[in-house]
Length: 447
Image 1 (spheres, one colour):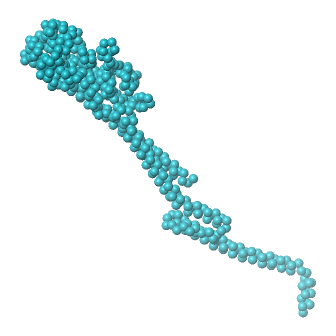
Image 2 (image 1 turned 135 degrees about the horizontal axis):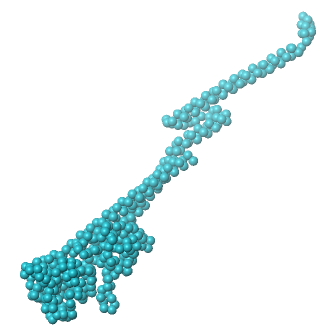
Image 3 (image 1 turned 90 degrees about the horizontal axis):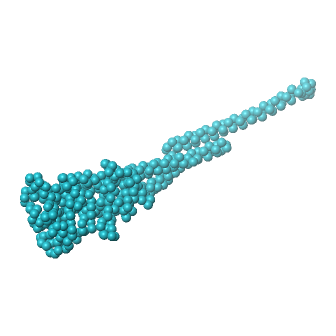
């Protein structure tokens, strides 16, 4: 029983050390995860601002050229050729176009298709817009198709006219390629301040998804962009943010809560429970949620982008991805603690044995002495307190032995004296009981 308190203290100490080690490691990992999420947010935000800056540069440079009369908007072939050359300089841009007096054919577009081929689109007879396949020099190779096209009905045109300044359109269906995109457009005024038309630049959302897929993120993490409406913009997964309707193959937006990706869907549903209106998100927020019993970090960040763009970045990271190392370290710590605990217990047992063994011998010797075995001696040769106690015990035992021997000798003497006393008393008593005549007779006769 003497050893139990020591073992309990050791167990408690190791348990406390293990718990504190795990908790401190968990806090450190949480901080690292948060720092990583903030870093990804900054990288995405920087990339998007850089990505969205190209249309600004293109639009403004073309407006300057038109105002300086370096670019003739009525020379459609020259305008289309100019746009084709610009398209090849800016790889993230899918189309550049200008529309002025469109009813009189003042419209030109240069476009790069998903497969890398180049098109120009011009009016031959309004509203019949003709698409031509061209080479890198802008030379027409063949006529592809003709369709009716009314610029004034398109979101980019309406946005520029409504804002009366450079602005972004809402995300909408591009005509023809079956893609969702966004357009930066601006009204064009000549040097006298008269309205000349609208110039615009298209960005395809799939390019944003391509960037998100190239981010260096933990294996099972996901990054996606949302509008405040809850519609998907782009995702690091293979999922497109739209689907093609079966009737006319027109792209249809996907709500994140209806995503085919289970993690994206679960994150969006959890977010809808926590936040009623996504437009209310003004600062970075962090949560934890579970999908099929697995915990995930959820990072929500409103992006500070250019005017008219209220996009939200969502990052999900399985806690196992960032906690895996700490769990491995915890297992290692537990094994080390068990090993150290075993060694500590063995050392304690040996130490306690060194202390208790002579005490037990001392106890046994004391019991023998109480039984009258005065010759009992302890043979413990140590130079510590136990050795001193043993020496004192042996001295005490010798003193007790000598004392008891002395007492025994005195007792024997007392017994002898007591016996002599008894004899003396017996003789005295006999003499006292003998009559004087008998004594006299004996005395006379003796003469």
